[in-house]
Image (cartoon, rainbow over all chains, first blue to last red):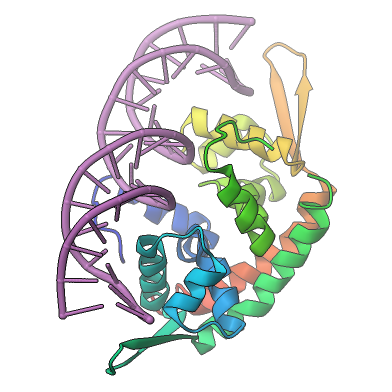
Amino acid sequence: MRKTTSTNFSNEEALAAICPMHNVMRVLGGRWKIALLYFIHQGHHRFGLLQKKMPFITTKMLSAQLKELEQDDLVIRKIYAEMPPRVEYSLTEKAQTLLPVLEDLYNWGEQYITAQA
Amino acid sequence: MRKTTSTNFSNEEALAAICPMHNVMRVLGGRWKIALLYFIHQGHHRFGLLQKKMPFITTKMLSAQLKELEQDDLVIRKIYAEMPPRVEYSLTEKAQTLLPVLEDLYNWGEQYITAQA
DNA sequence: CTGTATCCGCCCGGATACTG
DNA sequence: CAGTATCCGGGCGGATACAG
């Protein structure tokens, strides 16, 4: 568990027990995570590249969400001890198994959300 | 659009353009929405029943999230002008098309989240 | 029974400056 | 290049009281 606050954590547990989907939301609910997965999947493996593709995300958030994705075993962070430093992010197999599902969800959204909202 | 704050809305738009998935997250990202969809799907159509199934959710949140789901055309709110008042919630067709996708996501979570987190 | 109104704490996420 | 540190504001969600 990543959570640090111990207050009302029972809610989380109870909700997870009732709706395991919530675990998924916890992992993917971050504001930029799904977009990050897509961009990494599309071959943008560098921190700077991701920032270029998403100019509105701050370095703090990019760093934080990448770290969370890494902790949730969705991305791999490979550091090249060079000068200048280089870091490359890639998807884990776990993340790749998720992609088709996200695609379904995306298609559903295409059809039912953007089509009429 | 439901949003009222006009500040930094460009981020939302840009993110939606880059990752339409975000629209889905906006609709489903609420803390209890997916659980609610499941419970309604399972036949708990009444406000009180939903509260009984989720004793930790407050009336405020239950009411708010049901209202948002209604506005997003995922649930139907039918009011019976009786005494005592009765309200029944049911899933729209749109929500029912979503259920299989949620099920996939749920299965993915079962396999990859709860199995090893 | 089915909610609304009000207040409030906390955490997410943003802005900016700084570092190896 | 690839981040971390710090401060901060807004909104989400919770607790409680009240209403039709």
